[in-house]
Length: 348
View: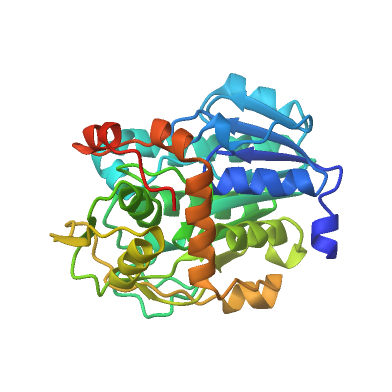
């Protein structure tokens, strides 16, 4: 086992948003490594059934904006914090901008303030969003240097706000922060819904035998990054001293067309309903997305899985193994509830 993984044995780790997609995957990995894990999650987009039953896991249903909850988790004296809790994501923030600001802005500020007071903390890893904070006109592949901060959704604004707070608490208050910029994370653990990412929604609809909606032409690209790679990057950020104070892309470093993704999901699931094209959302101004992961490779030794198809198959397998829980938990967009009731879903 590599040294950065060995370093987590017997450590107390706080994971906010630990019942979510990336969070639950991270929690399971930390438990495998011998950590004692404290999860703080309000279950607004996370699910307890997504977490293992383990004696080294302390689950606290609470909120990053609540002082009582924060005092409770900090009383456990965590050595490393992975701050993944967020009001996710773009369309949700457009619909509920005040809630977005409260969770992503105020919640991050409060967590950093507690981290400043609790001076034994060895690392604060903040989950930012590379998909969001890079402007539409930025040169690709996206590198960590930003030329402007033109944002088109409240979620994008508050994710950058979190980074700015991290900068302050590192430079002035000496909280050892690292800013992780996620790119199009996907994989086991992400429940579909109207505010979720395209891959779990495509798999969900395909298993129901429904056509897959593409908002645009299908030529749009995204830098889909497997959740296992995201988690490995986070673990490296919690270990390597060179990462402190830095913003680092966690990305596969490849473009996948949305049309190719839809066709591949339909093929793997065995869905014959095809594809349906819909108008592009007005805030969705990024026709392509490709990130540079050179900084992550240089500082962290980051080495993402190049097999996109294989990672997609793992995600579909997770859907098959957890189908009943997923159907019960999915936040269906309008018109989907009746489809779920009337369709059992494909078994393979």
